Structures are given as structure tokens and as C-alpha cells.
Image (cartoon, rainbow, N blue to C red; front, side, top):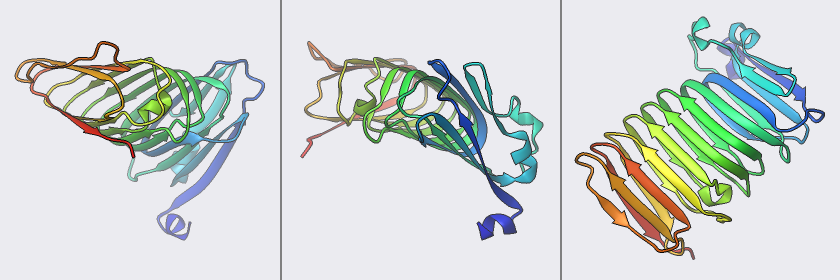
Length: 245
């Protein structure tokens, strides 16, 4: 806190009651900087801001009908001379549709104990981690990222039926650990990327790759729990298998 004050930064918090909103709650978050998202308190959304007073005044938490907006409609309106940090705490046990629109960002998102019918991430150049501590309920996920270093962990705890990943030149690590409760189709569209898939030997998977100078790879299974398809040119795809102890 002393360091923040010395740099002209302030620490502020906004809290929004959403327990009377009819689900699904639509949550849109538009931010840049360092962003952390995780489970919070039932019936509430909390928004913590570590930034200059100038930015804190413009980046708001608002509710209109069944829609929550966190951030600024146009991040270009702010002259970002600093790297702000934001923490968002979402309510557990409440159905939500979550849309994340990030500029250049570093993020850590933990979906553990959240209920999400649709999850969409749109971002530019990023370094980020998407994980799930404990069980989550997420039906469909769409990730649209620019040049990125992206790690997805605990995907089995999320068990989405569909995961679409569209990315630019990226380093993508996809860990299929966790407690799978359903089948999952994963589609990755990219180019000039390094993709590492980590999967326990106990998990039945199917992996196919297509694209110019990517090479055609086929790992097939008659009844796969997880089906992965990678499309695009000049990709390097690596599968790492390990045994759960």
C-alpha cells in the first residue's frame, strides 16, 4: 500500500449487489493491465482497483437490468502511463454469461466454483493463465487472442462441451488434468504457433492436425473423452502423456 501511494497509485473497491437479478447474469469486463478474476461472495460482485486516481475515476462497475459492465467502453480514451492492476470477484452459484475484452494484458483467471453458460475472451497481446481450482460449470468457451503466451490448466474441472481457440502467433499450453464429467470438443485455429497438450494416460483423447507444413497427425480413439483438432500453417504440436499417481 505504501508503495502504491508513493507511485501516486490508489487502492479502491466497488461492491455491487446482484442477488436479486434474474439469471443468467450478463457480465462484460473491458480492461487492460494486470487482471485477476476468481470466485467471490454469493450475491455480490467486487471490483478492486490498484491504479492512479485518474484511471480509477473512469473505470467503473455498473449494473443495468441483468447486465453488469466493468471497465471503460473505450480503453483508448485513457493515456496509460502506468500498469494498473484489477481484481474482479464473481458470485458463485449464480448462472452467468461472461465476456472479457482485454487490451494488452497479463491475466490470471480461476473459474473454480463459478457457473457460466457462455465464456468468451477477446484480447490482444497477452500473457495469461486460465485455471479452475475445484469444480466449475461452463458449457461453452471461446478464446480469441492475438500474439499470446497462454496456459490453460485444470480443464477437466471445467469440462466444457466445446472450446474454440483462435489465436495469432502463440505459445499455447493446454493441460487436460482435472475431473472430467463430460465429453469435450476442442478446436484450435492458429498459425506459426507452438502448442503443447498435456494429458494423463488415463484420459482417452483424439488429436488431429491439419495445415501447410504443420504435418498431419492422427491419434485416434473409438470413444474419446476429449477430441482436439488443430488447424493452420507452420504450427508445432506436441503431446505429453503422464500417469496420475
